[in-house]
Amino acid sequence: MKIIWSPFAHQRINDIADYIANDNLTAAERWVNSIYDTVKRLKDFPKSGRIVKEVDKEDIREIFFGNYRIIYHIEKTAINILTVRHGRQILPMEDLSNE
Image 1 (cartoon, rainbow, N blue to C red):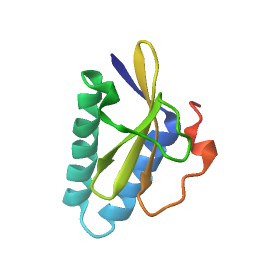
Image 2: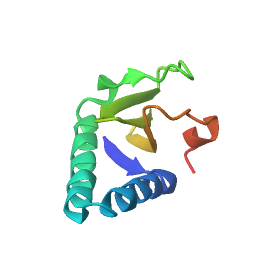
Image 3: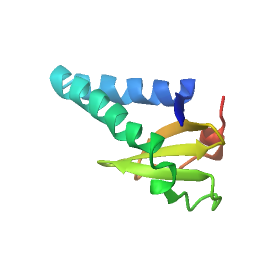
Image 4: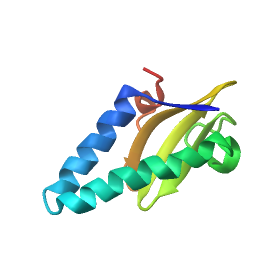
């Protein structure tokens, strides 16, 4: 399976990394590399994440990376990463768009 990051998910990663970099640039770089490495496992195990409770659909799932939820959509040939949210943030439904 192929992993496709939505522009929105990339922007969320960049925003979070910028925030971390305000205190520690090296930690921000490590965080970004680690989150991308964590998502790579979905190629082989796309259903390893749990179903997102807010939508309760089999094909919308999430994995956790520290305090962050990585929310993705499983399609026939690809995993679409939709968003990355802090676990304490409310998940807006518009974040689940593939655009």
